[in-house]
Length: 158
Image: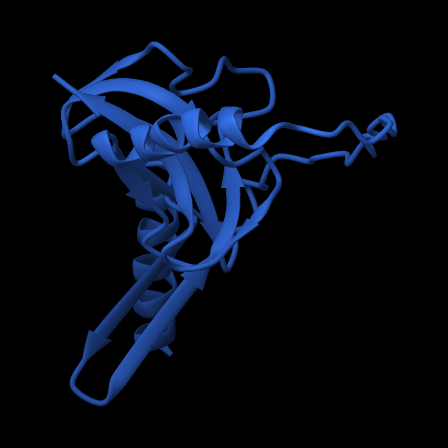
C-alpha cells in the first residue's frame, strides 16, 4: 500500500514541477516503465476566421514592355533569407491572443529571436529566426495551417 502512496506523491511532485515551469506535457521513461503526464491548463489561443472578400477589378491590357521591368522586381526576394516552418502545425504570430506579434515587418532579429509560435499536437513551439537581419515580409497569417517547409518570413540579412 505504501508503494502506491509513494508513486502518487511522485506524480503530484511532477505535476507541481509542470505547473511551476508552465509545462503542458512531460514524459518519463525508466527501463520498461513509461509515464506521460499532460495538463489542460495551457489552451491554445482561440482564433476566429474572418472571410476577406476581394473586389473584382476589370481586366486591363498591359503592354509587353512593363512586364520585362517587373522581372527584376520578382528576382528581389532572392536577396532575402527565408524562415521556414520546421514542422506541421498552426501558425501564431503572438504568444497569446492579447500580446503583440513576436515580430513585424521592420523588426530586427538575431538567431535566437523568437519570431512566432507553431502549435503541433496541443504543444506550443517557439520558432527562432536562426538568422540575423530585418524582417522584410510576413508570409503567413495567424491561425493558418502550415506544412513543413512553408515560408513564414523573409529576412533581409544585415
